[in-house]
Length: 341
Image 1 (cartoon, rainbow, N blue to C red):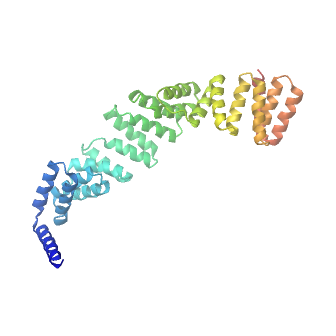
Image 2: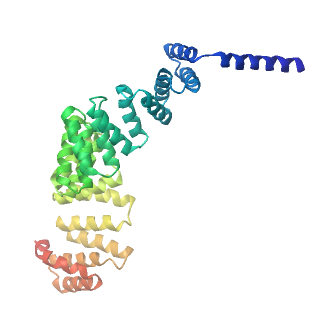
């Protein structure tokens, strides 16, 4: 056992001693050889040893940064590129990559500052794109739009640019400009159902329910899952274009899953009422009251439905009772004439 221990120690001293005799040049050569065999991790380790021996060697730093990047050691790659640029500040490839790594590691202000510098040098690629995305992440949406436009002038094939513009306009509450941007993005990425859904929701917010329905239906035809949220939103848009039958079909399916959802019941009741099904409307609003007797809007709509049926003596007191429960319902009085038609 003692003899085996001595052999092991001897081997250890041999490798340690051998490591101490390796030069930076040796490590660089081994790193290159490892890369030629597509052995990125060993190459990274050799370049790292070279940097440990000479922290100011640009070839060692470049090799370590590049291999760290390939291994997705993004923070190591970022910091190593910074050290490299302290020595070779005009290395345009390193500058361009550092812009991207700053963004990837959420160093948004650094991305903006360096991106502007690199763009002024005419180096790197997509600098304005990363600057725009960084401004967006920082909540500076007007600045994001400015750099989206700059990036668009250089490359109008990137669908993500108008998509990012759409998101920026939404944050600025400019839904009409957002829809224009969504449509531009979807011309470049016509199968992106997620963007179609966002476009539909934005049209609904304007509201432009006809366009909302168009994009909801395109998204569903393209493979968007009909989740309860999607079904609810589409039903509301169908209501907006007076497609009450389609709205009710979706709402009834949803109510099978969520029978006590007061908002769904209210929309379904309104759809029944507007499609002339006053008895069904009353029944639906009564379901709301069975769940919560304090649903003043349900009481009010039952009153309106009774008035439409010609039973003013019962309907008007119910409307007054509802307004007493919730004075804000008084604002609905001016709609009664249209609801009776």
